Length: 101
Image (cartoon, rainbow, N blue to C red):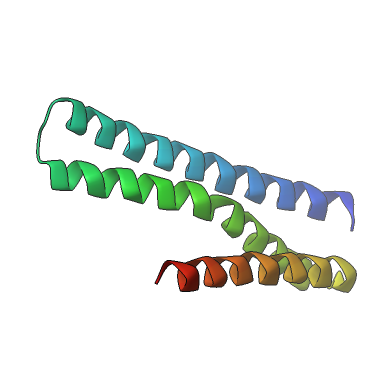
């Protein structure tokens, strides 16, 4: 890949990880504060769960963005490798959900 393409990918990945971390931190902090003050426990629990889901989904979103970018620039080796990583991530999610049911 050329330098401008690499720079673009790094900027996108930085934005995804940054926004994911900020969003999950805000939701987790809000849920914690609501729990500490005893205000609407259902809402506090929902905010905390949403924060955790976003925190877990952020790295998966990074892998999806990498697959898309590598496909757009036709870097088939890295597209294949990141697709394998994505399949492993989604497979582990499916197994964990199946074990939980």
